[in-house]
Amino acid sequence: MEAASQGPIGFLVVDKPAGMTSHDVVDGVRRRLRTRKAGHLGTLDPMATGVLPVSVGKATRLARYITDTAKEYTGAIRLGRDTSTCDAAGTPIGEERAVAVDRQHAARAMAGFVGTILQTPPAFSAKKVAGVPAYRLARRGAAPELAPVEVAVTAFELVGWDPPDLEFRVACSSGTYVRSLARDLGAGLGTGGHLRSLRRTRSGPFRLGDAVRLEDAGPEHLWPPGRVLGDRPRVEVDDAERESLGHGRAVPSAGAPDGADACVFDTNGRLVAVARVEGGWAHPKVVLI
View (tube, helix red, strand yellow):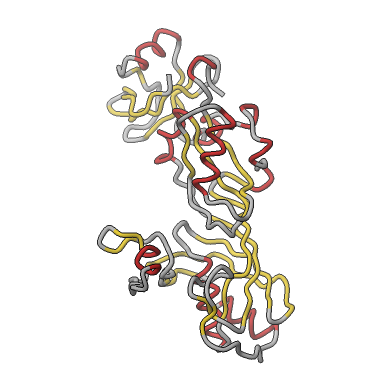
């Protein structure tokens, strides 16, 4: 955490409970850490649990620099019936169908989703249509037909088989809807299907082992910003250069490559800025002091 006079600064990894929206969790973080500034780094549906990273204080300015947004999940899919939302919270669609497939057939079908694929988001999603979230249109009975988007699935594995339920592990790019994977797997197997449960185990550099329950969260659980961005080119500054950065002035980049967004650390090892390196100088873009 940075200096107390600035209030809490850093990243909090929350183990989101089922039934809360991501916004609810952010509100809880604001109350617990007594700050007005906080934002999540990737929405989880209310039914989902697991890793929800929250930026706190001036660390909210750093979200654009967190480029590793790969996600990993575990969960369960119920075969035999589609729902309006592609998960257990939705209204069942049609009659329940028999699950006349075996474990090997299901595993082969899941493997067919691995790679770069085109995926249609669920009608009940935050995708915008003419500036309006699709879920709002769907609630009015005017569910839009959303265009497929390209996503990357690096693993979709069967880890438990108890028909009509199967347990899975998935690793995928940001923007992948696991609900759509459940829907499309059910369609491919000829049974229909929906997501029954979901737990996020990784979001970029944040993992489930790092997460704390919201009710336990405190300033001591904040990741310092440098822990998240420390793999970028590094520039170290003395006290005078640190003060210059605080006034928005460039400082020598000390060998960091031109064109890079470098992390600037003070003599105490604290991240004080992210700066663009040009012509041997680091020009501050985000200043945390």
